[in-house]
Image: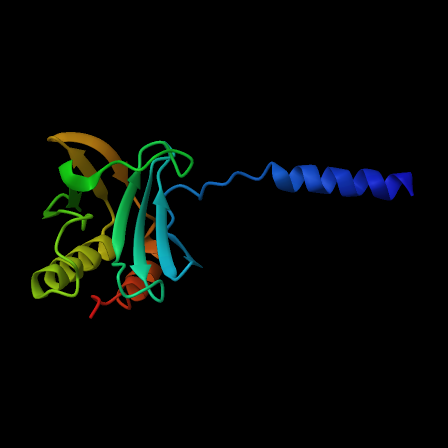
Amino acid sequence: MKFLHKISVTTILGLLSIPTYAVPNVWTSSFTQGYTEYVLSNSRNQTIIVACNEYADIHSDHGFHYYPKGLNGNSLPLRNISILFDNSTVAYPPQDGGLPTSTRGGANEWINFTRAISKAKKIDLYSNNKLIATFTPSSNSVKSIARELAKCKPAG
């Protein structure tokens, strides 16, 4: 009986020590509270999330978040961030207070943004003309995320 107790305690402690961050440079997705979240972390534990409002509510829009210190830190405001995809396409992530995707302009921006980020093999984030993060997703995860993000249509 003591042996089984030791195994149970060891198993529980082992499970509690599993890191809460994703494998670097591999897109992952999960569904939570009405949103499908596409998550990409790099080797420095910096993380980006593309959040697709599937069923949250009609007043919430899709979103993009950057966490410079991983998911346990705070997200950085997007107003000063620009993104370079594969050293050629520049995009400005959707942000609070920007055009909602229910408008034509917001919908076009969202489509361009999701199309570029879903196919990118290198994603550079800049703030005030300074490189702050680089993500290099694996080829297989790029292929799988492109199909999934294509389903994240503009609201409305």
